[in-house]
Length: 252
Image (cartoon, rainbow, N blue to C red):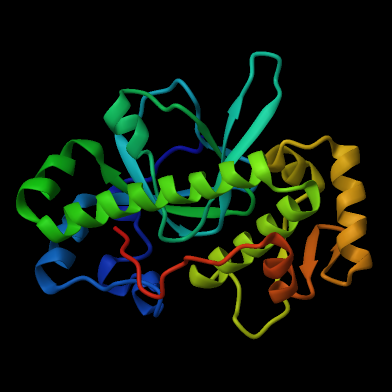
């Protein structure tokens, strides 16, 4: 993982945080903003394809994704990978390592990523002094559980075609809510078919065949560098899924 910059090297003061400008996120009141600004220790800049956190390691910090995106994954001893979820702006990462003593999964970037760095030892001050922010941390953890429930349902009960339709629609919805994608532009997801296979528990060959079937239905188009989504509503209908992404959500 890249070296963490000193606190003085932060490029995005909390008062001018770009996430605060997005309608999807709940803003802070004056007291909360002052605490978050003191809680923040700096910013971490990570290249595409880098490991941000590694399973089995300990970290003294928590992170909020400020820009870019990546994925959480676990590995079997023989190297087989299961992607369990994706991280996008506003997501809190490293909380598991804080509460469990060490990370139970790894995180890799899909694009250059900027993370706000918070001191893990100050987390109890947040709980003691700022009940609303403490609730926000609990909300973020609960939301992650809800997403994992939906992903498990998809792997366990949806067909391969439905799984892929769900995954693409899910990622587009989250990316739009996190301002990674514009509401008006044609959605493009910079993922490979290997990422899809590792998320859905399919072989690469099966994944490729499933992609072709959705292409024939004119729901998406796979190009070099990722997936171009042609009909999000059609994917949602095919997956028998209803998005639960809220219009307003907290972040640290």
